[in-house]
Image (cartoon, rainbow, N blue to C red; front, side, top):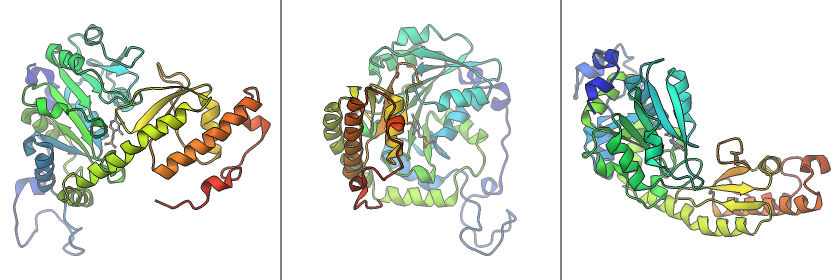
Amino acid sequence: MNLELSVRKNIYSLKPYSCARDEFKGEASVYMDANENPYNRPYNRYPDPLQTALKEKIARIKNVRPTQIMIGNGSDECIDLVFRIFCEPKKDAVVAIEPTYGMYKVCADINNVKYTKVLLDKNFQLDAEKLLAETDERTKAVFLCSPNNPSGNLLKRQEIQKVIEKLNGIVVIDEAYIDFSGAPSWLNELDKYPNLIVLHTFSKAWGLASVRCGLAFASEEIIALFNKVKYPYNVNCLTQRYVAGQLDEGEQFKNECVKLVLDEKEPLIKALESLKCVKKIYPSDANFLLVKVNNAEQIYKGLVEQGIIVRNRSSISLCNNCIRITIGTKKENHTLIKVLKMLDSDLLNSNNKPLAKKSPRKAKVLFPEVFENEDID
Ligand SMILES: *Cc1c(COP(=O)(O)O)cnc(C)c1O
């Protein structure tokens, strides 16, 4: 892949905005360069546009160089930037697996870039040749997600590798759930493949969805393009400091969270399997389960009425009558199963008539014992 030919011409030649904190780097005693208020320290100062301190810590943990890291306001920002850097609106195209994370298509639509879906097989696996057959000279990027959302499975390594090696364009591998999978990250292959962009996030295994911090890893040349196009101060100082503080403890806290969640997986699967409404539980390498039920709409509504929110994925390709359940705490999982059991017996008694018609429900009243002693955690 020739990077110059792959990047939009206007972006390749873009002279980026140079902010005050770009022009002077380092420590000074008097700052009079950015029209800031001298009071209300430390929040009066603009944050480091390149998040140098945070990148050094991330580099150590992820075993990459700081210059291979782009930090975004969530990995959603990084996804959008891929379009803005590589895809000429109304001209270029991307190809993605289907079903997958919805943001790739939304970003394509916002940027007016053609988005082609390539259906996974019935086990949600990727066929590299089938995907590559949908690419052409206008295809600037391919989006893969492994473990995939909403199916939960890792894509086969060999097929991913084929796509990276054969595509004359960028391959984005979204590894938002990699820490739950036990599989090696594609980060290890960054130096081998100049067309690879790997996405990670602090929103899932690290338990930091609210701070909005996502990562793109790529060659230094690609990261330089990200840095040109991103807003100068895209990651605020609270997020930079908070995440850096979390990293001071290394990966210990994250690993403990991952273990707690994974320990809940088998018991939850067993409990779900014993329910009559559950038809199939797809194998998961992530912190959620895709579950085929007899009537997703009915189960979803029944759960909502008891204050439990899962994701109804029924309208998505290959996910007919599927709900996606995020693994919760032991207590939350118990609550879910308890309510599902009651919905299960209602279902049998009502000849599949909608529950609401049979007995209108109010949230949290029918099974008060389920919600007793509920800690807020
Ligand atoms: C949750 C998720 C993300 C995370 O997005 P952020 O913007 O970093 O919170 C990214 N990709 C996939 C596939 C996800 O499911």
